[in-house]
Image (cartoon, rainbow, N blue to C red; front, side):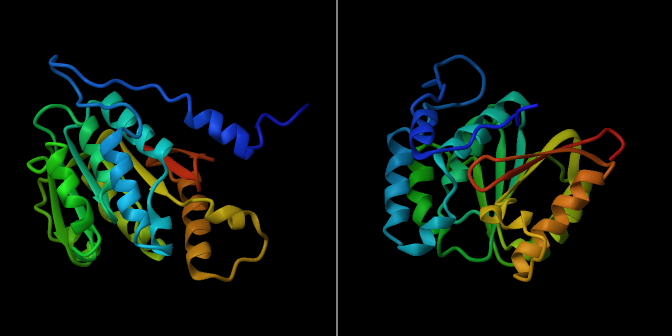
Length: 235
């Protein structure tokens, strides 16, 4: 039986990027969506690329569209992001929230989010997005017990992913989504012998999520790999 996957070539990736589906939004109540990689997001991407090699931490355009789509599809009103970088993913998540929704962004400092803050303002999201700078573990531990979320996105230090997962899961409502980025590590997770700490940590979490009965998980080859987990009712 032939393998049920298609190898991604540069030409095929270009085709994928040329065939997003989106909406410019209207005056009707509902999620504030936008055409994929609209002018504001393109400007933020270009501004981030000026930072040099570190700009590789920026999510891809299709990932941003997927985040907006999933947030909107779940009707999320309260979202949290661990690892904000220059704020591209924050815009994508915030745009998918229902009216009056909020996004709490956790990042180690304000250095990189400061690049994106003017774009949050231009997008009309300054009142929607709240940034808390500092160690994310401490930020999560300090949240009020009653604060819960409909959606979570984790794209921070890889060795901290499992800690963030265990701190976030109790705060997720039943059927809420938690999404982890960079879960394929450029394909290295398939190697039999892993030595790099980040690779080891991600491989361990992939294995854990696959058998964790608290969530329903699927690992998808989008960009560098996304683990999409739905919290079960009893999770």
